[in-house]
Amino acid sequence: MLTVIDPSKGTLLHEYPTNDAASVEQILKTAAETFKSWRETSFAARAGVLKNVVRYMRDNIETLAPLMTEEMGKPIKEARGEVKKAAWCAEHYAEHAEAYLATETLTSDASSSYVQYLPLGTVLGILPWNAPFWLAFRFLAPALMAGNTCVMKHDSHVPACSLAIAEIFEKVNGPAGIFQSLLLKSSNIEAVIRDSRIQAVSFTGSDKGGSSVASIAASEIKPAVLELGGSDPCVVLADADLEKAADIITLSRIINAGQSCIAVKRIIAEESVCEHLVLLLKERLAALKVGDPRKEGTDIGPIARKDLRDHLHRQVQETIAAEATCVLGGELPKGDGFFYPVTLLTNVEPGMAAFREETFGPVAAVTRARDEQHAMELANDTPYGLAASIWTEASRGEALAGQFAAGQVAVNGIVKTDPRLPSGGIKRSGYGRELGPHGIHEFVNAQQVWVGPATG
Image (tube, rainbow, N blue to C red; front, side, top):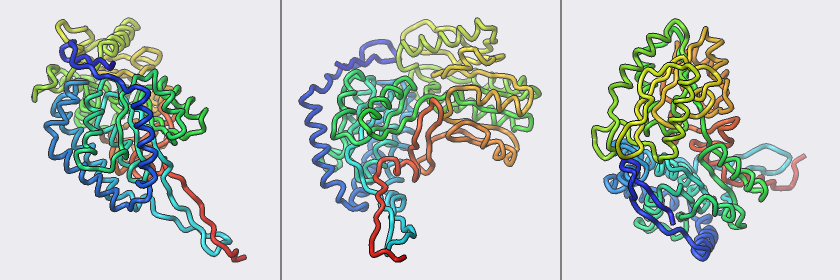
């Protein structure tokens, strides 16, 4: 049984039975059988299915968005935006997959030689709770358009979201079996990964979970893409537009109550502007409203689970005990639900919890850097390498971008995921890429074809 607690109240929301062995078998069998016909469909036919999904999602935002608000506490205005973004992802691949996977002619000693991109089979997506619709479509849209079928094991805390996504394909009369939802606990997913009908795995989640999934997939010689955690640095140099930087840092840090892998986690400011930046951040962060995620005026909802809030509070308290300064927040609020106050920590040093660990919540940690070189050293002083950002004169920022040990870098802007651009990390933030042309190439067979006779 999957038990879901309403994070805004701390009370039981609903319970869902998990799939038994027979239903798991039927789901995998259907996916494998459907693949035989789905792989033969044209790009236009696949795109037609996804475009029907897009229309349904855009017409039913007010039905789909509240599912996220109820199950994991996403403010309703953000939840609506997530449904729209997920629909955009599906639309993007419906329109561009054929070009992304166009056959490439390569010169050799053959009369003709080329690479064609063919689907693999059924791809398993193992996904977290923090962006239930967006992460699902980031996985399924390119995989389906490449001709694969998809099975999704979503997080145990968002079963209603998981089933709703699968039901969309039923509502638009998509071919049965191209996309199905599994309701399983994480402890039961290993057998699915090992099943011979699963050809590849896409995992988004913690580095610990990614390590486990990767080892299982590797033992079965199956490809995997891992998008894991991040302790993403934002470097603010002395020549930055501090007002704009403060606006964007604030937005990045508090989206989804700070529960985002690519959110700014560590703010590294050059010494001469650090104090001013802290004042600007304090002003903006203090103005945000924490409260009921169902209300339109709420900026920050609850942390998704009690254990996650407890972990976040432990990180904050350890950082303060290590002599960081708490400018805002830092105390557990009274009352129901798993809310956490917007918190601003300064004088954060390497070795402190808020610097060395990923903080998943509305906690901003500011570290002072002596100069540009020191700032870059601090930015890369982490086992993670998902994303980074820098605020400075544009050409200087571009020149420094290559020095970040990160999969994506934003210069004078917010780090975000975009269907048109690849996203992913290095080091303990994972491997492989999602989105853009690179993402759809992860789960295809790049098949070389040599046609004789030889020409030389």
